[in-house]
Length: 77
Image (cartoon, rainbow, N blue to C red; front, side, top):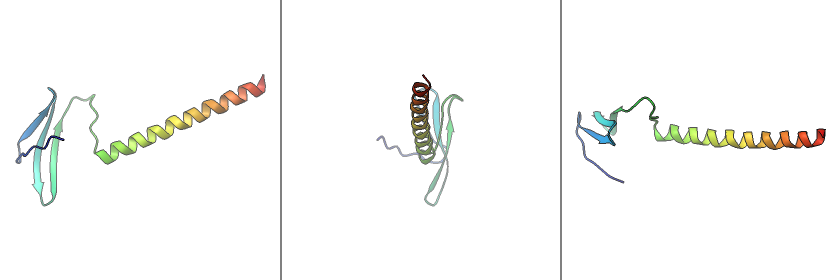
């Protein structure tokens, strides 16, 4: 992990099209502003992890549905 020190209104650039700016620091919280292309998803890590978990569950459900459909098709023949 790369660790950088920044002050309020200072930024870092990721690649050529993502900029992260320190907007405010209050107590134990840091507010960040993120400039990124519209097609780049930006999520808090806990939200991203929840999305991944839901996608895995949905994929498993689809796999189960495909298996059930296959069984039904075989019984109909």
